[in-house]
Length: 192
Image (cartoon, rainbow, N blue to C red; front, side, top):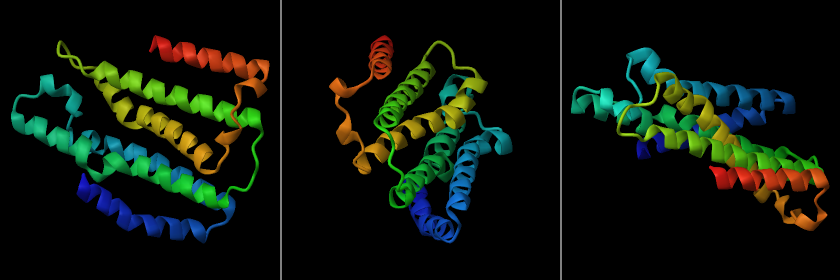
């Protein structure tokens, strides 16, 4: 894992340098495209080498297969690049994003961020069963789409807090729609 993070820290200045020299719209398109590519790289071990995710440990015949799968899906650079790039994009937006959001939009971003994090945690909990492994499609979806949604949630919260936009969150000032949204969010957390 340390090696993967060091590799990402080496390429981070290059990514920011390229974004800095693009137009504002070009930088946003650039970040979104490399983030999507970064999350799709999580499919690399399965597509190129046929290595199943490590949550399929019941299907492995040897300890070597288990170790190889765990190393590819937990310690490889491709496992971290999507989330890492999303963090770089959030930092870039903190410097470049000067638009003030309305209170309702900020609150909605916060609530949606918490819901996305809860969804990613709920899907992750499906994997760790000892009676049978999850479906291959579900586990590959976890490594791409669900991790992406969880990262969007964490990035949304980070962005609101780091840009000092969450200081306005006062439940008494919420509109009726936002109060309903907050109640639904609390119900979803309790159910999950």
